[in-house]
Image (cartoon, rainbow, N blue to C red; front, side, top):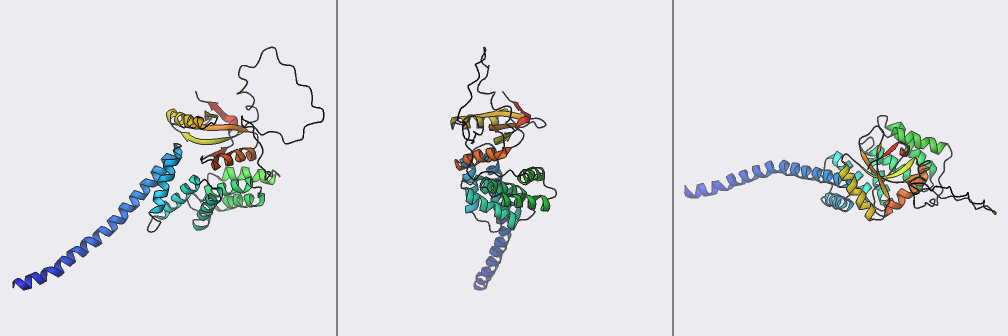
Length: 288
């Protein structure tokens, strides 16, 4: 009887162990999904606050854990965040293309089309840029980015073909003239009796409808923190609000055209900054 009890215990123990293993499988998968989702949320927060090194470290940790078994929405978000944090334009474009091809109609695919269009336009590939915008307008009827897509398409159809050579920009962010200097330059206008009170801030104001934006925040302290970090990197940024929104935006430069702004944005992305181009510079109000 003793021997029988000892041998009978073996299959009983195996059954208990198997039951525990089956029970912990879904729990482990759920814990992995929750942890991955938290990593993506932390990446998004770090990116919005301008902590790019931290954001890159977090998204790379997510990718090293692998995509297998991940939620489809989480995978899309991870691709989008990794594309935004990728310094090399070609590598970022591959990620945006993956979103468009593998996840048509996805939550970030319309934004990926905008990014792809901007990249193509910056390279002078106007027909490619137009095609990306047409896809967005046709296939994403509910996208909030359709307004930007229609505006960009109108500019392209109007013949605004950017040069393959980025336009030179001055320290204030304005595009310098590429026209040859006249043989006999006109004499300079006489200096006024009283000099302007703010000679450095006034010149960009009249024509600067486009700007390069680093982030938008609900709190002034967060925007000011990013501003100080960017100023430490030698960038002349400003804090502004735009009519109709309470967010405080951190921006650089004022540009007379989107092509000029995109050229400056491309330079900043090559330096590792995450930026976008805004077209509402004429509605800015300074934040002290």
